[in-house]
Image (cartoon, rainbow, N blue to C red):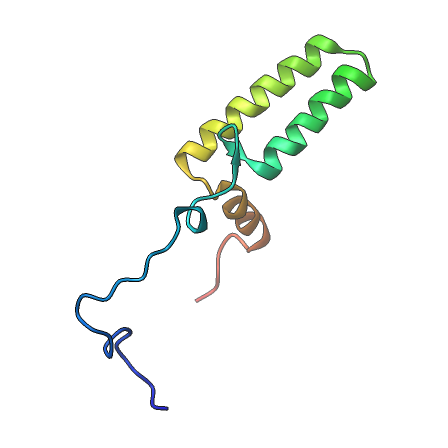
Length: 94
């Protein structure tokens, strides 16, 4: 089997492969990334129920969720981008 430099060169001109929308969209919970929403809800519940700081739990939960939704609207993969940004050095020597 030879290397094909042009992907799709051997396919008919009107060939299309349907891809379901769920395979391309990020997993969100109420507009925030799933992992962030779970961590935020757990933290808010721990403050509200565990420490009995109801107001602080609600405020942190609402503000945290609003910030996560705002960031996900601008870039749904902001968590992965932030992790990569923190993991890689600030600059590379040329």
